[in-house]
Image (cartoon, chains in turn red, yellow):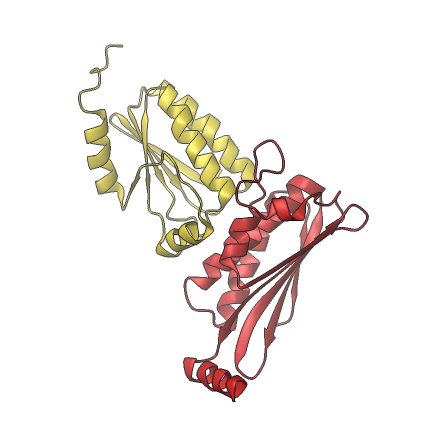
Length: 148
Length: 124
């Protein structure tokens, strides 16, 4: 299993690195198409938020697996001013700064799980997960197990 | 910059050759706006097949390029959106607004021929 990958996000050139690392890890983990692209796109949005709104932070890509699933966890942190209205930022019509739009609702739609914690003291942490069942049979067995 | 810009008759072809930084994407807008005027191009083709991520920033930048070069007298067609990128764009619900797209260069040329047909035959 691959180890975690850490990408420092300081300026727009780091977005290129973040996208490439995300795609590489997703492919290494065995994600089928189009998942590596969906993951890289979501990470690109989150990374740009860090550059534009906070001035710097980091993104950690962490592989995970259990008996039936494998996946990728993305943890993006910054020490910026925080997002004042998190709920609004996750709404589609919201635009955080000068009509730029946060891209958060879109990123959320590309991933399976999405969590955002933000306050003025500690900054913002976005945790996103994308995961896959190893095979459909395993998923059905697990579901049946839960129902029983 | 990793963009190859070629002239073909009345048309300008900008082929993006690798992933671009945000700064490069913004520079592309200025450069294409300039070149469309310098060459009096009536059509612009932007080949994005080398982009394996089109996020909201790139989508907005493409839209801005289209609107800007339109003011300089050129129509734009985007070509080469990768299948996975198309899926991501839809799932993201990115609005590509006024973008005209074609599958490849041939289709783009046909589309541009239609779009520029009947326009003033270069009264310059």
